[in-house]
Length: 296
Image 1 (cartoon, one colour):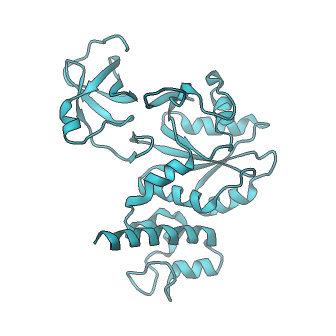
Image 2 (cartoon, rainbow, N blue to C red):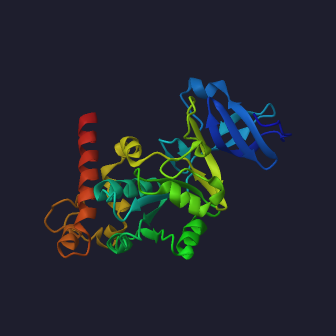
Image 3 (tube, rainbow, N blue to C red):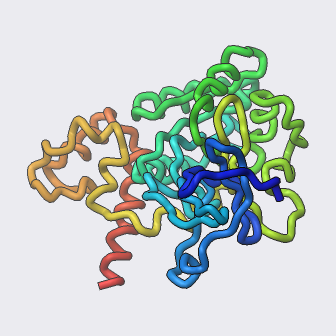
């Protein structure tokens, strides 16, 4: 536990670590470790890493300030951006899964960035073209070109970020290149990121390239939790390349799936929107539609 710091009444800070019911909070007066008020537990409220909170004089979390967004696993709030790390080859990216997650980020008002690794084996030009045309920011991680790594590091500066991706895409290698002091074993995310052999689950924001980076799950864990509560009417807005066509359909309540006179469907047919992206939209839309029908 960190040493107590003198806090003014109702000090405000941000939670940077959560482990076993203890929270490390960074304030303007210093860093302290504290618990949350029991009333939160009674109401089923859980403080998240990234939450802005107010502390009492007794160094207890007394209030959780409104969240801009949150991710369920790991439980992190107020993210600025998510870096989705994919390899250009081996393993080849699952575009349906990736497109779903990119949409989830935009739905949550979190800026998505696609980072392509292993460009020494495959240039990744097809991925770069596909997602740049879709309005998604794409960065290449070329370890033979230091400027590409610096470009990624600059995106982290001053931001609260999350990095996720399938096993084998090179997240540890990328983090070591961005922040060599981490010295992460290649092929795994070590206990330095809160994912070691702890018996108590730890979530943390750790300093990286002038910002904070959240420890993160792989895609499979991210998938299960995140897009179960998307409203079907809002999903089209999570695909940036759809924007020029929304409002131009024959019917004002167009679902943009297969309707006649749908401007989005026509753009797909003309090659202006990638079919893989539209397929992901349909999958998300149908899942949301089925869930709503079941709930009612």
